[in-house]
Amino acid sequence: MSGRALRLVILGRQGSGKGTQCLRLVEHYGTLHVSTGDMLRAAVADGSELGKKAEAIMNAGGLVSDEIMNGIVAERLAKPDIKKRGVLLDGFPRTVVQAEALERILGKGGIDAAINLDVPVSVVTERMLARGRADDTAEAIARRLSLYDEQTAPLIDWFDERGVLVTVDGLGSEDQVFARLRAAIDTRQ
Ligand code: ADP
Image 1: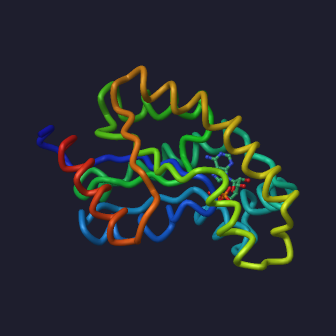
Image 2: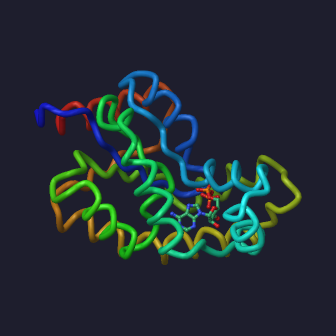
């Protein structure tokens, strides 16, 4: 027990069920959900300066610069509600540079657990194909997933080296996965 509010990072491939589990986790633990994807989409919808910069990058499937992302997240984490209620970070960090910025913001030992919600590529591919979305061709899915793995593998190692990585099996029912996540988090608190 650290005595302060819970701080978590969650990593998971597209189609891993991360979105659903995040909603359940924040309800259960009472932490705030900080999703950088949601923050960027809100900025695009507002037409803010940030939104204008982010829109083209997001549409092209690229990553918004570390400098911009680190600034947005530092500002959000500085608000008093985070200290009081804790946080589930979703979508950040996405690069090692961002992970290092997070360590500067929260301090060493500032994250209780980095959860890797693990669902094999073959399974998420099937799930995404089953959604039948126009942008979900087998080729586009394969490209997005391999890009995710390339970007995320160094982060997984980075958290592992700091002793906070927890891999949770994401196969099974929503309830089963949620129970596993709770068990993993409760042992880290
Ligand atoms: P996805 O998991 O499909 O990439 P997100 O909702 O997490 O969805 O993010 C949507 C887009 O927002 C990303 O494709 C990327 O362009 C941008 N984005 C979100 N978080 C970050 C981040 N931490 N660093 C850089 N770009 C980000």
